[in-house]
Image (tube, rainbow, N blue to C red; front, side, top):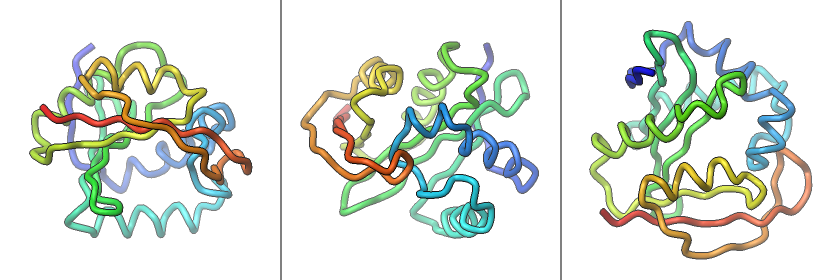
Length: 157
């Protein structure tokens, strides 16, 4: 595995759209768009975040092959991390490697991460990177159309 981060290109968007509409991935993430198959909404969202200088959005390449996205953004005054891995690539350590790479270039601290309580893999990625669990709350998750417990994590280093 040889992870590198780069800017998301227009040519990446079809792959990202397919990953983000995968039913298993949507169920795992939970906090996604209400209709992951709405390509117009997807395109509008990516136009907005790619144009926003406060948002960092990077493609994750493994040996030159696109395998996911990772980024950071500010919400309610807190800098957060986000990542999405091609579901066919889960379990290979890609999210952990990409998060470590992002932490080397993202200067903001503290950083926060949030994860649905049933997403043990993502919680493990955050913990391995040094994020500490700071609380939980129940919130409505559009992707699964029900309330889900969401765990919050914080990184100070």
